[in-house]
Image (cartoon, rainbow, N blue to C red; front, side, top):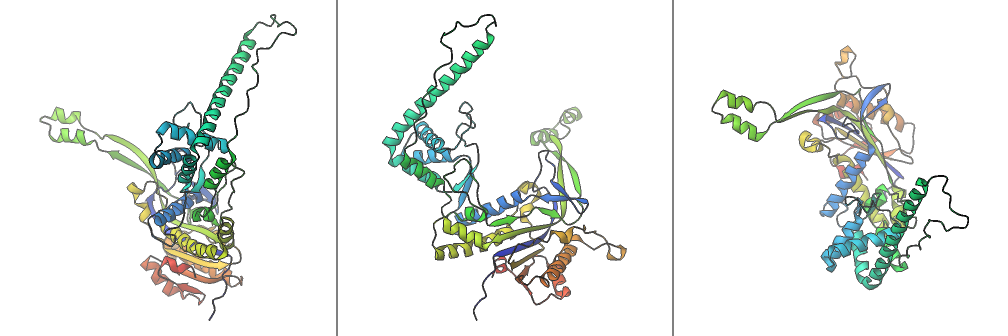
Length: 455
């Protein structure tokens, strides 16, 4: 029996319950929120989710695990010049200053803007994050080392021209300041030369072969996570941008938000040791009290989250990156499996040590195919009301959210012929019992592993 062709979009929906966590916060260290259905909900932003999933997949691939093991992955950083300089040091024997100055100069001349050279903390950082294949620094360093004579000759003239331009800029500022401080009555004689310095010569252009090598190193190439999540790099028009194949919604609580301000007291070990060994009440009193106190905001709740994979866009991105049709198909299938795994397994790592938030597992995952994306946020526009059912409540929020989500999907799927191959996964034994009680339609298949959520 031949398998029917797969639809363009894979929609993923998930219900998870979290207790006393803070996965993402705003500029005031408060939980992020949104208003939906007339009430405030806690929110975990799509940016936090996407980074957690992308890094989870990259780490597994780099460790030789998962469907993408051995595949090229990307790194998003402002430190490409520093990384290329380190490669020149370690792999090609250059001294640190020579390596860093050269790497920064060639990348700047390619079109990337760097921080203020007078500030050591940002002088060698690009002003924007650059998402590029993880071997970009090694490629840049390899080209520089292979063309050392030509590149260093250009670098010296480039840095000299930069220094002249900066000196001329300072002179112009000084001349304007001096002219502005002269009394109005003291006008320069007609025809007298002005104090404005002459315009400086333009910076020498980077050799074409070197510029092409830098652009190629920073191009998306075969980095699978760039094909999945996309990138936008306006500073280098010659380096292609990538429309992401993954759409991610903000996660939000299915019920009205509640948060607590947790007061904490941190102990000073040395103080407590002195108090424990004190020989008098007065000595002990001197060491009373906590070492530090404060508050932290924590949230609890049942969240709905949603993401979509555009299979067509993913394959297009891989083909544009240089893969032939067969290679792109294989890489796309592997990327889909790893994306689903990351959607289920990954979690933002904020406060992971103090809240153990990354150990959570979803109560339910629903995956299905369609000819367009399907977002089921409207199933929770009316907030879940926790409490005894006879008293007007819906019971615990987790099971109530599962019931709503499956009822919503069943209702929609009867009206949309393109929905098919729906699969559900649970890690909660109570939800597993509930699924048996609900009498699921034949169109829903229960699976036991995340990798079985995709056909």
